[in-house]
Length: 358
Ligand code: PLP
Image (cartoon, rainbow, N blue to C red; front, side):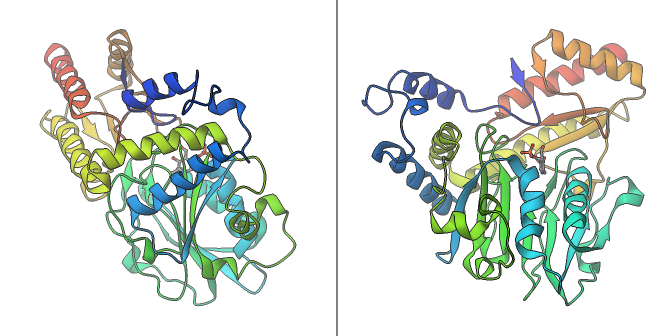
């Protein structure tokens, strides 16, 4: 099976094999990770090692915390404003697609939100220009989504927002390339694309922001409470953290974020070239300057042909190529664990389909 799912997404085969093995007996203790206390030495070792692997792979400065949460990235949509959007401030949001739209809706329930850049009038096919952003000086933070998974648009660079913390939803492109963590106040990412299984969300937060948390918010929603207890305030999602640990080691063994960026670029070039060389049979949905190297969205001449292609893809073992329900058409998600060869099999199939129907 060729897995082009947008999330939960493909995992490296080596990781799946290791998980299978460890489910009988992890590290020779005679039990699986599912059955041991989160306060045990065995789990703590995995927990702290996972935080350290994230630090090493992303070269995270020492004044940042690496935390684990449950509730997916969608819970972060609410937690960010709950922690930082107090009455004296407003929050600035970049509206670039489905996921930033959801983040904005949650923030509006908590406080005042200003949309400082938007591509809604272009159906999110092109990213809003961040150089044109008009950030209100009284903003508690600026929120951006580095990769909009549904529309298939991705920022190659994010701006420096000076004294105003930049908060970023990196759910669908974290660890796909190197980036400078010190530009950000807070980064969050649901795991189920590049990091591992659903169930854990990674948050990287500058300690200065933790001191700004005010108000009487529930402990489970409070970043400072979780930072104080190293994400062991309550039972963490132990199984997900453990699989993330294995995925991180796989990334480290395959060239780290630089290695990932190189292979992701080659894969994306291959798929986009196939679309661009098709003479209009396939059409990329995102503008060239906004194209994502994680989610390639494309359409065919009409819906009937799209249905026919999706049907043939399924019959031939390709899964997950339906577009997001907000966007429709097709989408190939080519996260870190999807190989160049799998992309080649897909593009060969697309070329052959065009030969028959073009
Ligand atoms: N943000 C982005 C960019 C996403 O792609 C998704 C899910 O696909 C989410 C947030 C929501 O994540 P979750 O389902 O973990 O809440």
